[in-house]
Length: 510
View 1 (cartoon, helix red, strand yellow):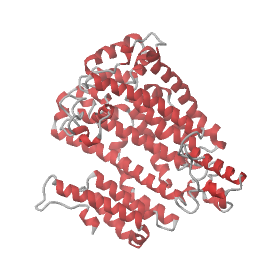
View 2: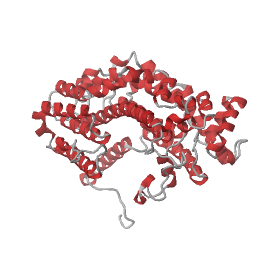
View 3: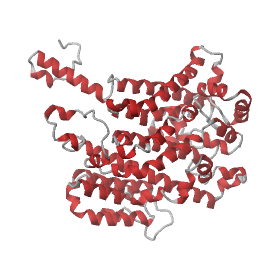
View 4: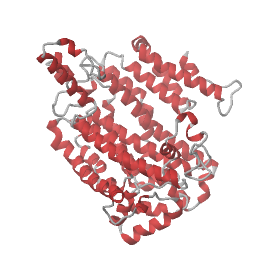
């Protein structure tokens, strides 16, 4: 019954669902997910019927993106209760078949084959010949629909993949490869064995999503490569010279809102004091105008790619023998020096947080040389360079003044583009890092400078956090070591009660 209401309509039907119907659909989606998390085993006997009904709903075109995500999460939760590993994998592959086919279409593959293809797919290239196209209702609808199909498919894969990985950790063997499980018992089950590559078939016994990676990864690499190339200096120079195309490089209204540090209780980006319409003056992402949509789309696409790479690492498929032939291609993109130096601070922060840190934590020591060195070498070399020119103007160690830390706005785009052609890429990049790489469009100066400060601090903090996590100074491994030290201390004192005691948190405790 709940699945029926997931696609509820008004009576009589309306072209745009009413707020009541939208609210009902949202509550139904949340309820479906809640039920599947509590009693997934009771739904397993109805797996075939649920799959057929879900496919019918997904192909109907009547579901909102949020309801599609609810449905995928619901099916993922049910799949985790299936006992047979092969049946689990087949079910997940069946559930995600539409999403995978969507990103394998000729239109999407042509779009991600090059940066020009991607810019055309998102309606950016067409602006050069016809600036009015960004407000043409038919064109806006087509471009928005095409992008939504591609991004929704990638997002569905990410959502289901994460759910499968979370469920794998909760299995009796704690996500350990089955080839090692038989020899493990007791305390050793708390630790992931430091073996070499594990093949996909063994990994799939715990995680039904992993068999999809050989098919998914080549597309993911191309999407990320095309997206990152948009920020290469020569491409930025071209876009910044155009009064409309330049906004593809801008931060979004939502990012501007986060820089204001306001409470969400005031209504968010569209509420009182919000920043909607502040980047592209007078227009926001809800408008029939492509210009304010581009920044959010690029953020979604880039972050989705980074998170999928993080998932690839966490699931340890990145080390599987079946992907060995693709690994050099992956390295050529994620460790490409041009990509690394062209990213803005906000991009690089997500790159570190969502991919690099997870990769460092999940790589077995036996694979450091073969899999980690090729990526971390260029990354660490670059981060040293980036941080130096980020902080030099602040601490007064360079010829750049504090004025150089102000972000790029709509009023001086042409000037910055001219500097790139006149002074060269290296000099341009030094100033680029000083301002965090930010282009803030029409944003007011106070919020703009706050955004630069936020980007600078978050980059530094994220790099520091990543290093501390890898050295077990914070995060999950730090907790493991703290508990181990606590156990050893209790055993030395021959006092098991210490194992249940928390840390001292009062001055009066002795």
